[in-house]
Image (cartoon, rainbow, N blue to C red; front, side, top):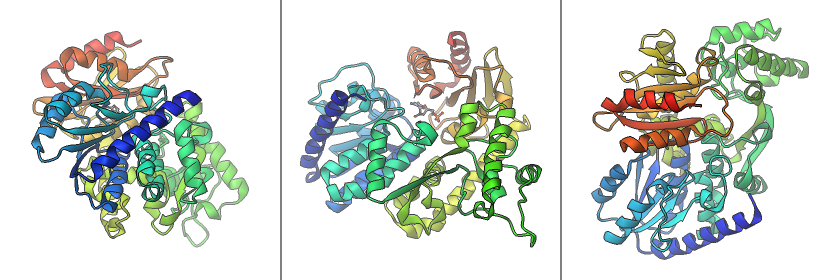
Length: 478
Ligand code: C5P
């Protein structure tokens, strides 16, 4: 990120903040945001500002919309003249500009996805997108980060108190891409802010789920990111693994042991053996080494185990969004801790759905087709569009899906009639290749909605076009 880029981005933030400042007294606002952790935390940051200003607002949480879906949604709420789109919108600037003019709407876009090429008059569209200033929105800042920086301009106090939500959003979008899972670019500056304010603390640790508070074998069992082949989701295998590397999972009274019970040597053994195990199971060494990296803790939530580790907080938000319980997720972001037990129930339900779905797939109880370069897993009858991304990410790190194949395509049901959702994951490293770009290019031909990043992409495709889509993609893969 060059200094000039950062300056230009900052000026745009200030411009949009002063535009929003004028609108805040007008209200009410319609906030349209995405269902993932980044989208929910972004919506919560805006809500915090509007609540303090006593400005009324309505939050609508949705999947990445097509232009037509977005138009219909906006037309459904004619009483709202002030709109903020979070984590979406940059792809639909032309439509949004037309609607702003024709319907006299005030529209603000906060997005970190690559914008559409179409140029629009900057006076009509008030957009903050890092890509417009040469800043990589996939790795350097999430929408929650952009929203946090904007909120700070609008209300220093409320803005600064939202900094943990910016960290959660970035972790939800896996932007911890630096050395040892550190942040990069603008995210690094946001983190510095959070550390200095003592809102977040961090330490390098074994990145197992709930490592500070769960028995060791349970941490292994629950760890999904990074996925540990042969151990994730299998309690018996985790106990056997610990025994095999001479770490007793239970003490002499039969009580489970925690990380804090291990000697220094045992901790070292655990890290070394885990990395070895993952590499043997086909995980690329650079992925396996991520088992040791920074964990980020939200100091105010020390007594709330599932909220304390910011990565777990992000998982919890993802669970809420994916099970269409997004409101509970937003309330938790707004610090309404009376919903804590409710959110834990959602998380348990989500875990159950994930493990049952993975079991069904591994037992090949759903159709799996092997094309030349692509594995197509058809989960249409099993899961919907909001779960497909999580399942395909987990599957893509399983050895049975790696090696020979380049691409995983997972089909799920879509809320759009006569359409299917497909989650695509790249199974190999291909330098200078963006799966998101290729999927978008093919989607454009059929006029369907798609997008994504280097290694992950998604599309909502008409049922009758799915075979054509997969064949075309297969042909164009490097
Ligand atoms: O839904 P899934 O996790 O498979 O999506 C993978 C990536 O593709 C995400 O970053 C998502 O935002 C993006 N995507 C998109 N447009 C779509 C579907 C997915 O940009 N229609």
